[in-house]
Every structure is written in C-alpha cells, then in structure tokens.
Length: 75
Image (cartoon, rainbow, N blue to C red; front, side, top):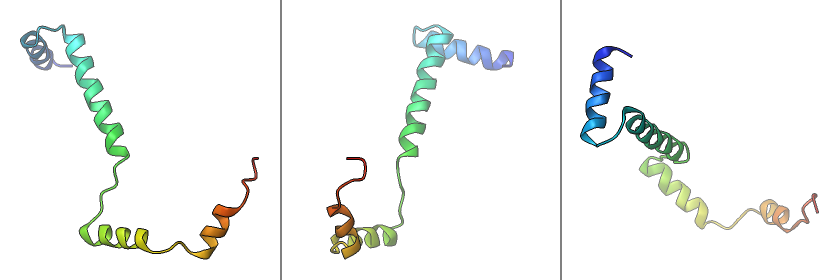
C-alpha cells in the first residue's frame, strides 16, 4: 500500500470515527456480501426472461413427472 493510499484510508476512517482496520473490515464485508449476492443472481435479456416464464407455464414433460414420482434411492 502506498503512503497516499494509507492516508486516504486513514482519512476515511477518521471521518467515520473508526480505526483504519475497522473501516477496512466494514468495507471488505460489504464487498464480500455483494460478491456473494451477485454470484447467485442470474441476469436474463427480456427475450430470455419471457422464454423462461413461458417454460414455467408449460406442463412438465412426462419424463420429469415420472422422475419426481420415483422413490429416492437414498431412502
């Protein structure tokens, strides 16, 4: 970390009444939570979304209903 970077972090932390470590940890946690959230979001174009909704509205194929009706192997 450069001296300039450290000074900026110290300044931001001071403005918030925090130590540099507290400030950094808070921002690291925000970034971690954002990255985790974003990893679970699927973005679709309008056309792909419409196709997805249409597929949900269609009845399940027979092979799928047969599979869901089977007793699980782990029981």
